[in-house]
Image (cartoon, rainbow, N blue to C red; front, side, top):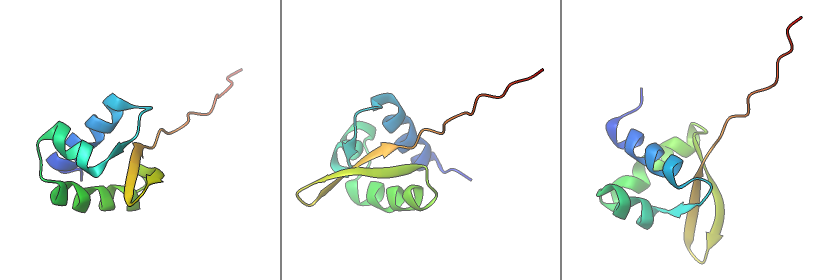
Length: 75
């Protein structure tokens, strides 16, 4: 079950896609403390819904995971 905070994080990353965001940037955009965002982003990463795209110094940059849909041929 996706919580309200997880939903806000996912919507924020979806809106900014393909740009990646740090925890600090996500927190500022959705108005939630960065420690709370960090807690939920960890869970979303474990579920495979977000991933670390790169690191800048100590900051991790996150991006939403887009699922590819295979082309299915009918006939």
